[in-house]
Length: 506
Picture 1: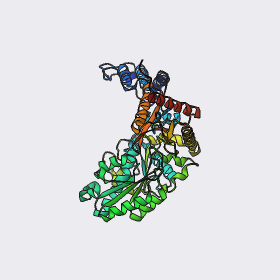
Picture 2: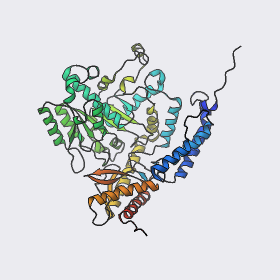
Picture 3: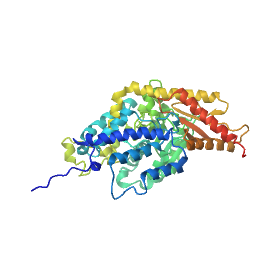
Picture 4: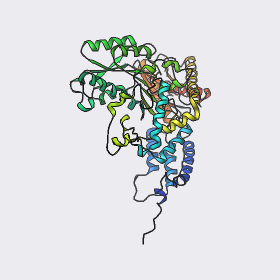
């Protein structure tokens, strides 16, 4: 006689299948309540007390043993631990949380992400995610048309973010040069003697991932040639042409130019048409890092900043910035799907040739990763729910907030504006006490920022410009108001004044 099948205990219930939604219901109720309770406990954009207090709260909530012998009721566990996480997080939905390119995600995108997480498709083989495998190329095609590359549905892939996308751009550029010079594949034979000759060019203010990726690709950070920028922090095309010509004269191999469309600090956009012309003249791969600025293409007002991007060889986008998606939502696009050939892999247990011949496609050969989430789904839901105009309006709103903040900073004698905003970042600083020297001014700005973090009042970014400490607002919350920004700047001024003129000891 066959023993009766036992139902799985509640803690081991699955999210998918016919019974998954019922198992999720009480957990979602607990999660919703924890989001509310945790936010109330935090009371602001970041918890109070600084790193020590936060670490202590996490240890108290999660316990000394995160893997006990016996578990507990899953809804109760989730309620306690989610409340601790939310209560101790930085919340980009708070208008005083404006330090980084860290967006508050749209509710519809988070809900879509939940659905994808519940059924958990993986995009390394068709039989692990049939609908997701069919969907991602549609998202790639839509974004390719937005950018103007028109490479089609096979000319890109979703990534973990800008660093991975930039790595892909440099990898494909590297392999193209190695193939052209040696007649063999870099993937198969390595770089050999070419390793010391390959060069990558980018603006002085380009993202740090360019150097990191050059190191990962075996070129070394010394392979990255910085190009001067103009007064608006944009790459100088004449200087670029000069550096490429100089490299060629001494026997080096220009491999790629990384143009920036939206620098992290200033939102500056390199002059893309002129840079593409320089690249074409020297047969150099042109990659545009539009992780931040790519969202400007959604805006009728700002899209012109990226004129020429459609002539690039490859492009990075991050829709967990101007796109309001839960992390991750990176995208790598190329003008020609054939450029992805160096990534192609055939694995018998994932994408056998006869399966593909029979019509079962695989996306394995388009990515640096194997297991991949169905991140295309939340993008597709967001695109259909808001449309280009709806998303563009959010971009424009953030741009408006940046312009307002810049105007208010420029009007306050205690603050100094570094440059007019291009997208949604505003770089500024407190001037410090009258007659302050550079070191004292740096101290004031560094300390005031940490004071705001410690008290939980605000999250303000920090950067370095001309070897001096500056502060930064990165405004990605379209629901913030001018009143919110005025209050945030008042907090900065007050903290700066307090640091500049501390009360004497009694």
